[in-house]
Length: 210
Ligand code: SF4
Image 1 (cartoon, rainbow, N blue to C red):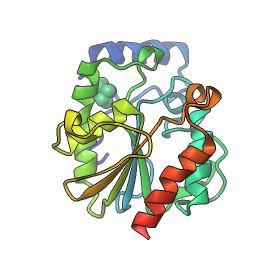
Image 2 (cartoon, helix red, strand yellow):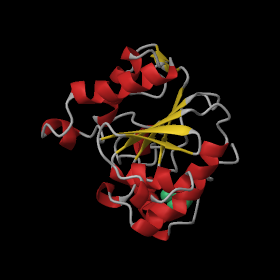
Image 3 (spheres, rainbow, N blue to C red):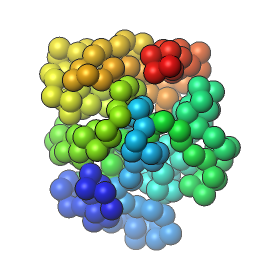
Image 4 (cartoon, rainbow, N blue to C red):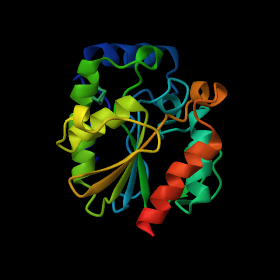
């Protein structure tokens, strides 16, 4: 376990630990633990999501794997050369990330996908450690306002000074921060985020990284 990874029984958020325990009892074959980052820590790109989905990463143990949100994310990463293999929504599908890593701002599944401000703050310690453990980190894509604000804070800046907005880019602590709406089913079904809008963010990242 890397220094930036919490243990399976991380007790720091009592509400989330209790929710985890409920799911362990109900679905003992599921992962039901803090979901670790996926991809090489030597990557230049880090994608920061919100939190595991209960039947997605909480079930499978890999970020954005097993529910809808991963479909657009992994297809887009592949399109811009950040992965090889075929995403099949299973952690053993053989997909590999290249020069990219994915992590969630909150590592345990929250009820109704809604972590509290305290839980976001508490898990930020692991996000900051994750960032510190990536020696080549150059670009970060944040998915949604919660991930954006927590990443800004983890980088030592004030979220009020770096407002979230789809397609915005900021420079913090030598890293380029690209903001995107979250690739959730809700956002894509309602047209808040179209595949082209999402591609636009990763096209800008690819142009920046070369
Ligand atoms: S969300 Fe993060 S800090 Fe809270 S219990 Fe899970 S791993 Fe620990």
